[in-house]
Length: 283
Image 1 (cartoon, rainbow, N blue to C red):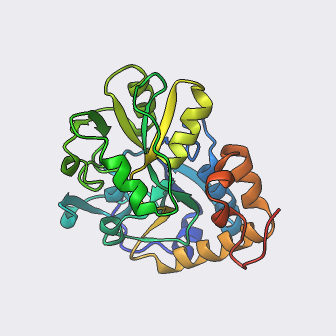
Image 2 (cartoon, one colour):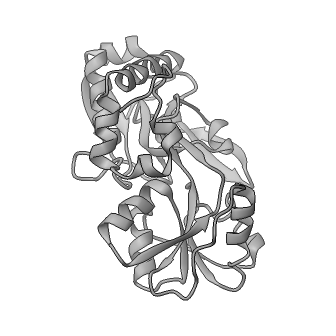
């Protein structure tokens, strides 16, 4: 049984000799095969701290509890904290989107990857992608106007939560997906719904993995950011990671990992990838 820990910072981790990475298989951040962009970043961070790396299995229902040591319930964007439970990890890293309700529970690192929610259809759908304008809110409104009466997959407790994305307000027939985030694109291809919402990293992986099977209709949200999640009782660990992350952006390590796992990401988010944390342009 895991012991209850009230504080996890570099001195505690160095004493234990291991950095515990809470990682859920998702997109190319955590592949489930022992690698992934976030896996490699946290492995490098562990080496930077001079400790061993350990990946701890978890899921979307329990990952926040495994980090904070408290049961957590979210109702209409409000967080309710329950009883104390064992802490199993030191940080969350798996393409973890910064959301207002999550910020009430954890502290996020500096942004580690850009994102956005997109509406996705099968390639044979009669629905056509919107004609984008320079105004993101107009584009979002145009996409949302297409949803009335159409079946759309969403996944609670994630960045694709129907409530968070206000899917019910569109008149869509919302289907609460019972599988995993990685399984939404295959479910769409298998006709489990007319549409699904996906975040950008997962959509990019799906486009590459199933070429000619899906198409992007348009944005469902403004641009978002992903980061590493830390317990609010671990400020030193978060600060240590932020300094480390700035360093791997400067020396080109981060760019190499992005090109390895998300080779087309810079096309969609040039502003994020063209400048490192020091403000200089990367090549």
